[in-house]
Length: 324
Image (cartoon, rainbow, N blue to C red; front, side):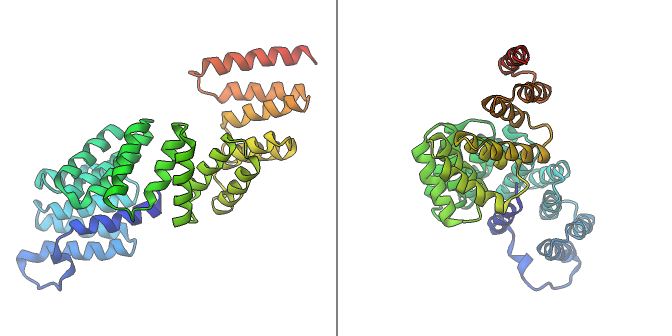
């Protein structure tokens, strides 16, 4: 999850925190653990995650059964992208308080960070059941998990529900637009991606997928314009150059296409599809030797499971080498 989304959901899940965290502390032995928790959240707001973990550990020493202390510690590890530790701490929190919806949601995000989307979906579902106030956020998160599992119908259903529950949750439109694009529902994708860009002109992913819609519709110039904006905001995102290379290829601007393929490969040296596209461009340019070499590198890096592509590339190499 990117930093912007983390910040957004950090604010949403504040609704689950107890009021004592925001009240002046009255020093008593009973409230010492609470004091450390308050201190930990001050550190979290400052981005001082290690110090927050230290505060949480002190709170746990004072009160090992404090679900709030384990939750704080899990949040800090989550912000550090240390998902195994976060999962362990959120698990402890829900063992102590089995009805804490936010702890399930945060553990779900930690599972998602590890690519364990089935576990994430289960936790988001439990959180939805427990806390209606978090339902919109959890439908969004569950929709994202379905999208990552390539289950586009389920993703669209959850993302649509998130919008119904919270129309101001505009971050959802970009993801639903991506899901519609992957379902080849280009009109719906275009509408959602337009909405995503309108509400957040810095949404690189929305520009990327709108560019792909333009490309599928044969609108290469509009595709390139969107990718130019996306690249300006995210110049180290290899896929943006790869897609733009395709658009330049369609326009017959082969040198520009090769330049973008090379930039994509510079950013991701094992980018098999960029090598494949280079091979196709070289063929169009009648540069058979260069095309054959690009096909060979493609075979080196493509997944062994893509047997059809590998066999087709081998056949092309044979044909090109005969023409030398």
